[in-house]
Structures are given as C-alpha cells and as structure tokens.
Amino acid sequence: MPKIFVDPGHGGEDTGAISHNGIFEKDLNLQMADLMRQYCHRLGIPVILSRYTDVNLVESHTARYANEWNADVFVALHCNGFADPSAVSPGKRRLAAEAL
Image 1 (cartoon, rainbow, N blue to C red):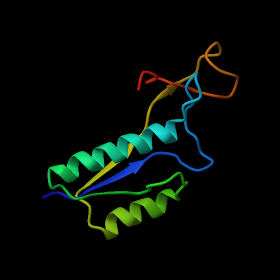
Image 2: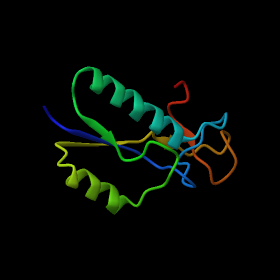
Image 3: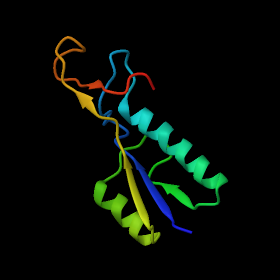
C-alpha cells in the first residue's frame, strides 16, 4: 500500500490567498488535507500530514519529514488565487475557489 504525505500549504502567519469574505487559504488547505486523511484512512491507506494545526513549517523540514517517513507520494495542497483590484484591498489575493 502506498504511503501518502500531505502538506496543507501555508499556515501560521502565512495566510496564503484570502477570499472576499475573509476565508484564508491556509484554513481551506488544512480542512481539505484532513478530509483526504480521513478518506484514505477508511481505505486503509497510510497518510500523515505535515501539519495538523495552524502552524507555519519550514519547507525543507517538510520534505525531510516526508523522506524520513519513506512516503511514496507527496501531495502539496494549495488553492489558487487571482489578483482583482475590485475583489479585496490592494496587496491581497482573492481565492479562486470561494464556493468551498
């Protein structure tokens, strides 16, 4: 059975993209990663996440953890954003997947 390592992008001070109604990409990524973990667990597929809480990890450590666990698959979860001056204040990005 393949071992899957899931890295929910961003976390801690790094919010990633922000939706027009204030949803942070980091939170969506973590929720999707946990759903993925639960689904794979029900199928008997071993999965671990790089983070289970709202923390920001050093990318090189994330890759090291995956390698130390001998993961067969590395999944980096992100939600794309786009620049739209009418969507949010300057310097912010709007989540493309706002419906989630």
